[in-house]
Amino acid sequence: MKRAGVGRTGRMGLAVAFIAMACDGGGDPGPMWGQQVLAGRDVGNVFFWKDRTLAFTRDTIDTSQPEPQDFLVWPLAEPEPSIALGGVDWTYPDRWPAWLVGDLLLTGTQYQRVYDVSSRQSADLFRDYTPPAGAPPQLYEVLETTTMRPDGRAFAKVMPGSDDTVVVGRPPDLRTFAMVSGTTIGAVTFAGSDLVMLVRRKTADTDVIGIERLDTSSGALTQLVAPTPAIEWAGVAGFCEDDQTSGTCGFFGAVGCALEEPACPDGHTPPCLIVFAKVDPDDATKTAAYAYDVAAGTTSKLAGANANRFASDRRNHLLVWGSTVDQVTSYWNTCGDVRGTCETWPGPMFAFRPDGGAFAMYGAQQTMRIVSVAEGTCVAADPQKAFSIYSAQYSPRSDRMWWVSANDSAETSFNVWLADGAGQSPVAVATDSMLGATFSRDGQRLFISHNGESSAALGWADVVASPPVEHILSTNRGDIGLLGNRWALFVDHFNAQDGNGELVLVDLAADTRQSLARAVTGVAIAGATEAEGTDIAYAVRGRAASSRDGLWLTTLPP
Image (cartoon, rainbow, N blue to C red; front, side, top):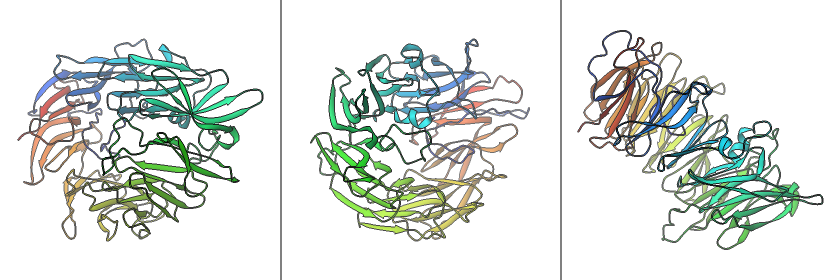
């Protein structure tokens, strides 16, 4: 699922569960907190969807179809779960991708399976609408031609093999819109409830690309950006070639266009911008980036040339774009019209500070660069401490940040560094062959996950301590359900051969722990709060079949 979490791969987060095969080693698992709500050995992929709706997979009941699992949902106020999607494949290592936003879930090899948890309705686009034709599309094509509305109340998908047709809406209210003959859709994004499309129209005499708006209620089309020869757009904004270098195509999207877009600090509505790139009409050897203001109906050329990458911070109305060729990055706070340019390459990964005052850019075999929007400065971090970074995060209070960087070009070991909110004065907190980290919600603790070949430790450090010292919670942990301000909930004493361990709840302030259950394979917690009575789900599966195998529910204590 597209949800944050920490597994034995080191990804960290809250409100997520991971369920794996496990056993109890053949012994007595001891007392179990809570109540067993399902018996069986096939429960997997458990997570809470919305406040008290549990979701998970079980072995499929329809063995005539090829997929191994069914996906079920269970509003806990109801007596039993129900099948949401029959016939899915979320098994390691070739699991289907899954995209979850709000009430909507898209999954399947091409995001063709859809489920709406609010209406309890599903759709199979290849069965119900247009069966795919030809070879399956590349992943980048699927991502360019599938989009989800930011509020999770609608999606849109250009149908593979019928790229003149788009399906829009949510089950059961899905609508199909077919374009006129000779039309293909190269990319889609939402502007409010309407769809904005990169459209190619080809006749015997012309081949042009432009941007059009589709009214999803009436089907009416409105031209936003006038079409020009397709050679100016193809391979830049969309209609990418399979052999193009990654990151050199697909410059198309919407910024500030959600129905519930956060207001600017002064209360006014931020501009809804459609950003795109195409060949520069003033210099055909270069490309240029543009922003179309939907309300004003005007197009502005953005700073720089050869832009091939952009990102945005929705909360702070910050647009970042740039060129890896020219090694230039520009930014624009669209609320205050604050703009700036740095002579450094953009991305490929970004971390935005919650207060909007800065962002970091980093990636493999690169030194991290930090841009201060508030001060208008661009600083390269110390290459001895910020080289080849795969993950970084600012604290919720914007006063600190961490990153994990390689200690050598071969990436044989990594450090977790803790720095101030400007990325300065970093201090090494942990070293291992593979590491991950996350802040607690109040930003006062830094949790550290070790994922070496011989260990999977979990620890935490007090970020205000000088120097910060890692306190080990587990030397061999399994899955993690909660890393909070007060509580840490995880599987300890993990046995990799059996795939299970002891579920423990640690009171971090009191430095005490409670054993909740044994032979636990994975754990989930509802939401990101730590309030008394918050639901916890965990799964048990023994080496040999046992009456305790199955799904259990309990709650956080006072």
